[in-house]
Length: 133
Length: 133
DNA sequence: ATAACTCCCGTACTTAGGTACGGAGTCAAG
DNA sequence: CTTGACTCCGTACCTAAGTACGGGAGTTAT
Image 1 (spheres, each protein chain N blue to C red):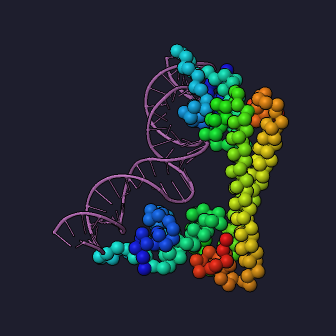
Image 2: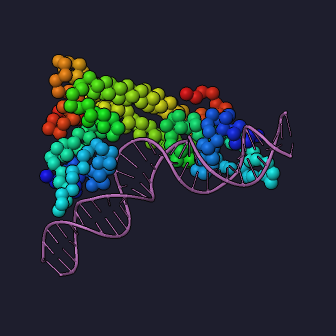
Image 3: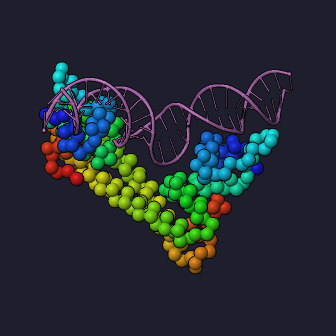
């Protein structure tokens, strides 16, 4: 059993983060005993760690909320949530890859620019320019 | 010359976005004539389009602000800004690629899961689990 | 029993890039 | 000359995921 600050320390988050999760109903707030402080169980710690791991996998708190609801029985829906997240990630990868290509070619234009004519990057951003992605 | 709403329409943004850019000093607000509305020049339109293009390249408004300051003379600094952005993008690509790998393996575990045992995704998020990235 | 910690709780603030609203002024058309 | 559309301006609101703050209550150590 932990006080809130112990729990926070174990989970490597701030006390305010714990309270924030409680407000978002990601975590149940233990009842306040008639005397002393609220006591957090090891299960609460597990849950916070679960949330942090899911965040590292790219899930938002809203999605994690769904994961937690589904976690006790519904493998298929959990899977479909993960697949959807996978789609989003692939979309982002595509965008970033395209971006990377554009920027790389602009930077290499800069390097070929015999010193300080009109900067090719700026030039490409001018609305008169047509060679833009 | 345009009124604000014409300008906004030409640039495919909302009127409020124009005002927002003015507040951020990305765009100079034309002086208000003693009668009638503020008049926006074609140069203002160019600038809004510049901003939008730069955003599509992944620059933030703060960075675009720098780009605009540097745009009249400093190719090297513009280039270094672009290179820095490129680094950030590459970092993000790495993260997302790692994420994609993790999620793909979890989803494939799900597919091999003879129906509805403990969901492998949920299992992997449990703090007792060690096989986590 | 008093200082020095924690806890509890609500509220406001943060970043980024806008969007929405409300009231007053202005402009063009019928 | 009035109606409806548009401008002007400030302020508040939005999402996401927290962080910061302030005052009062409870706890622990000396």
